[in-house]
Length: 449
Image 1 (cartoon, rainbow, N blue to C red):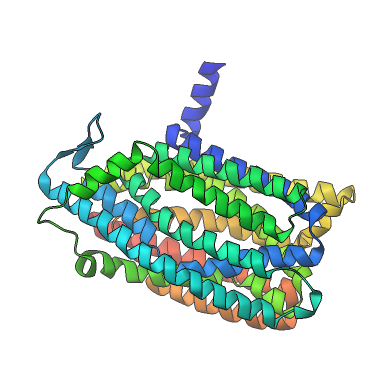
Image 2: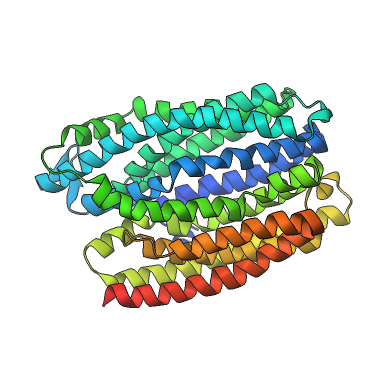
């Protein structure tokens, strides 16, 4: 049996880091399906709309994070490629690279300490304005849950870049364990609070406690020793933010901001135009599809340090060999999971289970499923190029974001959810898949020659 498992894992490219990350995201995706049942049982259709709209509004943290976590992983990996870690959690290698790595950590901590505080007050104000303006006659108790979610989101904004920094130190497997524990805690607490009748408070309290567990895992472990060792290693060599990071970050930031209008605008628009019930159906459908996507992209995200290291050493042939294999594996897993999801939804509808009505109708659901598979492939190509510490998708992302926002607002207003999904699918094929593939082929040829 062990031999069979090893052969199967090798075929699919599952190593320790991927295994933990997959387990985390499988649990997250599985719990997403279970939570759908809990939401359908313990929340009304209107409360479900608030539940998922909360997540879409909270996603404006993208405007504060601005893709910096991914950049931190890449820059840390490029410096750590020339270093090693001793048994007593000390850095070994050239002083130049140790110092630059230390300066990156110092920048990360100071920057996000400020930004996370600002985010809290912005989220608080935006949320109170939006939810007080629309569907205010439904008498839903959302105020205090929203405040708790704002606190949790701000704390998460600070800790996430620190975990990303660990990823760049080739601690991907360890960080996958950390995230796994946090996800399990979040899921268990969410279900317990639902059972206790906490309604919208359930997700808020579960998120806050689970994020606190992340802080505990870092502070009360050997991980803090590693951070202290890196922190003390700074000398005269520093990574210059304005000259090195900012030229890449502002491009990625615009891409991420565009991503908000591509992926997160559906639910608030439907909440404002068609009410919380339809917004809840969109939210539940997207939650399930994003759960599938989070599993399949594990093959890619766990290899960012590997890709970055090979690029730093200019081992392009090995890079391409690894990337091609991993991308095929990721796309296969994504297609299988999406197929299972569609079958699941159709079965529960066929047998008239109430949960079936909490998803979008079949036509828009299938369109969003196709878009999810396209997103998997685009994510792989984008990650490959961004590991070169460059952002070649700036124009494409901005154009896609603008077109998606216009399409969602206009088609959503006049044609509802069918109009939104038809417009989105069309854009994903032509302004997404085709354009990104052309950029990938051209930049790969240019940079490696």
